[in-house]
Image (cartoon, rainbow, N blue to C red; front, top):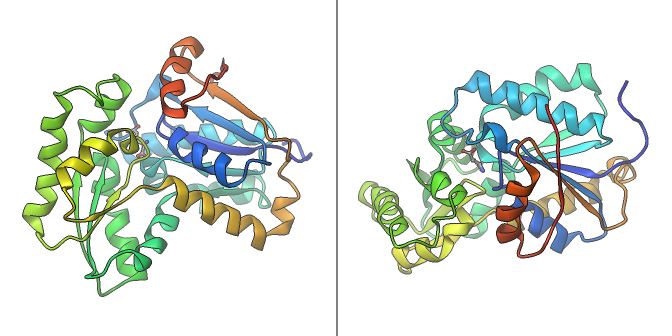
Length: 276
Ligand code: DGL
């Protein structure tokens, strides 16, 4: 039996990347309570198969529900691309039809209409997100006239997770994937950073793009979309507690988690270990 009392908003990522989304949520909606869960022990998800990402994500969602969340945000593009639809359609009805799980891909795609001028969109993401075709499919649904080109960046998450995002060696891999996009479509005017880890590489990406395209990060878009969602769904809003707190859970060693999480958040935190 899941707890029925109101609870925090759950925010899930394979590891640290979702913290870039959480940070913006807390700026836009500071009054809410949040529970962040990073499956750091099993990250990265970006190179894992559909079945594995789905199973791991489902375990995380169940755990957040059991800890009192009624609404869970998959602050991970890989999980949003590979697991969200199955969880919404197959699992939620049996778990609790009144709870909700939302992702980060749709709010990002919806925003593109207000950003691109020529409809040439580039998307950078993990191998899993890119090979799922989710961005191509969703952009084509919302904006059939747009052209989408994508590139998988298998080295970017490891660079971030190993704290090498500022290192000179990272420039090589930033250049490699950005130029891959432009070589496919030189007219790209908008680049989506379709992985929640990538904002940590933003300075380097910006230098490499050198004004050729607008760079879209997801945090603020997802936070505003969530605010709008809660405004339109007062029945869900009333199940979200509002004391301005945030709890951090990790499947890895919490001391290790805290070290890098504090770089993402630019603030000290405390984390607790959980098993899924
Ligand atoms: N942060 C995740 C995303 O947005 C990817 C990290 C991973 O590969 O686990 O796709």
